[in-house]
Image (cartoon, rainbow, N blue to C red; front, top):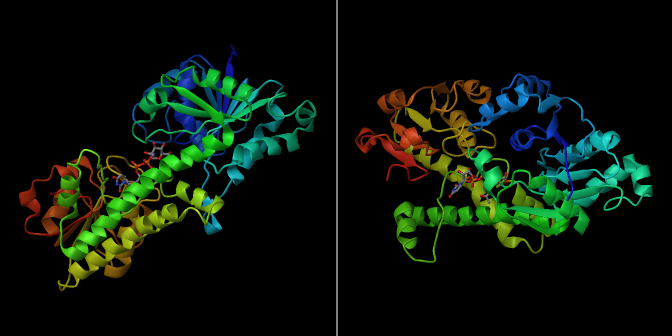
Length: 412
Ligand code: SAJ
């Protein structure tokens, strides 16, 4: 049995921070590091710089008892977890520069026998690349046999759903892909501190591709629903009724069409597969294109409706990338609202119950933030972009007189 007493987590974002806090709760001494000084200060005051259900309460406890400390540089520890972003760069290729910088930043602190886990979503081969960067910085570890002998490394992709992170961290099964069997064994021993699901062991490359395959599966299925919505528009059929009926089949479970796919995972990860196998990944690429095209379809619909008014008053309901969260990152609703503001001019109304201030990119275009009541009172055209709970509760009679473009089927 391998025992871990201390942990250093690099990257305190949507994954790294909850992970660090949960490990600290199990009794490990955790150092969290982030390059953003505001995040570090906020965490050390016991307050998360991101919004996640129940995270603040957990953080207060582990910061006040000293088991989690945030700082701007790494520290020595028995194990390291790298949880930094992997956006894509030019040509939809994975940008591993944050993973590389994180690896080089921990290199001086790594001691013989330590474990290093890469949690960031990465293309196949990235865990091996991480080891190569580490050994470049630390030829002494390479000389002692490198990965699997002098130190241990594994990929253990995160799978948690924003809004349910603290529940899913504990309950979900994990895939653990070690650079050798012993690497996997040690990584399983680490995660067993809190994971109640199973830890399935495989190679690092299989674990890397499995994570991408999970998110691509969802992207392809959403693309199917979005494509059906285009077909239904053409045939003047209600896509939401169609899907409800088709899903009565015992082996059919079509997902929901929407205004596009947002967030930093599902709209990004499939491209990493396309990048490593461009000839083969035809369906995966097309799904991305179908989903990325959807905002334009919504914009065209709104502009067509607006053309029928002399001075149309349009309200966009929802800006977040999915329901009941405050995260506006890579949100198709934001994209649509920005482009509608360009096309329609100042005065476009936007309602987002989960934020208190309109993002600058919208305010600068003359978009006006208002509440649901005002939008219902004043707008000629209601564009429902996110099916937040408060929107779903609006009585149908209140929207009956309006032109309604309901991209989520919330008001059926
Ligand atoms: N969406 C639809 N129709 C649907 C479902 C989703 O249009 O039927 C849209 C959402 O509105 C949103 C986007 O897809 O814009 C993505 O939302 P999501 O809830 O499907 O997923 P994420 O991005 O919040 O989290 C995903 C999860 N992956 C899978 O479900 C396979 C999560 O488990 C991963 O941990 C996360 O990506 C990640 O970090 O990779």
